[in-house]
Length: 443
Length: 70
Image (cartoon, rainbow over all chains, first blue to last red; front, side, top):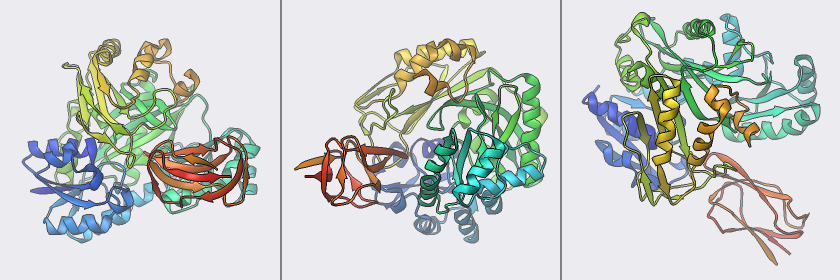
């Protein structure tokens, strides 16, 4: 593998370039008109313009990406996260061209991409899933009937959804009826399918996921958990490992279950099994992400492994570099997703970053997509950077994080950095006492 | 004549009113999508919709006129 095309942008493109450089692999970046000045464009061995700024004219253009890949004679395509990373048709087209797709097989992507099919697959494998529908819910009457049997509140979700998009909590029959049609329409617009389903809403739940990795020889390992309960709009803001909430016993059970889940689909490459955990530490499968996760640096920080390197090795046909007993964890890591948004209303705040000052410290890793003087455009995700802070234990990590955000400064646009400072002072957060409702109840 | 303008740049995700509608103050008139988020736009006036200046899928900049109210 001499040359990899990165079908992504921003911090994750840079992250992949970094490992490729260490492995002496050339990189081809693609960029839209909005991104021509971005650091990942300059850092890649070569960068090719793909189109205008909107995603459907640039980063979602599978046909153009393939054309560039063929023209540049790349050996593999790394899709990053988001965009085409979980698009089974794209993965299949890449493979048809004799190019390696750095990720699982198109069949696995398809299976896990349909949330109803993935629920059923996991149920059959003996993995606990949230009580809910095993088929799509066709109309309001059927939805209300089903919701009555499982009990309110329920989550109404798009079958083609994921990543927190296309789901809504319904308190009662009235709100279910109110949301039904709009959720279907939204599902159609975003995911191309208007199929929706219902799950019981797990109250005071924690969102905890397990990183897994598989190779072509049937080896599957886990790389421990990440607690991603601090969310806004069902999207992650802070992730940490180890989870401050789970008992050691439950963790072990979740690792075993994650491996069972991955084995049931003969999983290859990096993947994440997401669980929702209730107050009694009962856990249920939510979804599987068949790609590298945004928060993978948390796992890298506590294991000392390079997950992108593993992805490339596996895609190259090699065995996993380490087996389960050789994978160790050390210390504690917390990732803060720095978003261009108002820290109170969470509304987006695009604009020009006039200056960024990153604190100089050995206790933090910064995966940033931007530099001073650059513009955060309204076309893409509002994430500016990921700040991963670590320490010997959680207490030390929290202190390091406080020191980090005291020194951090960004001018020009609004960011959620002020929110992190508040969270780090919060008694409940300090005690590890938080659920997915943490941010909405603190406001 | 009054104008409802975009409070931030984004794509028009949904339009909830049409020409001739009588709308109230704070009524949702359309939804913008910016940075993977849906942002409802509420009317800052009450009155009759004279013209909807945008179509679903259009990209608008901050300050662009979305809807004209009589």
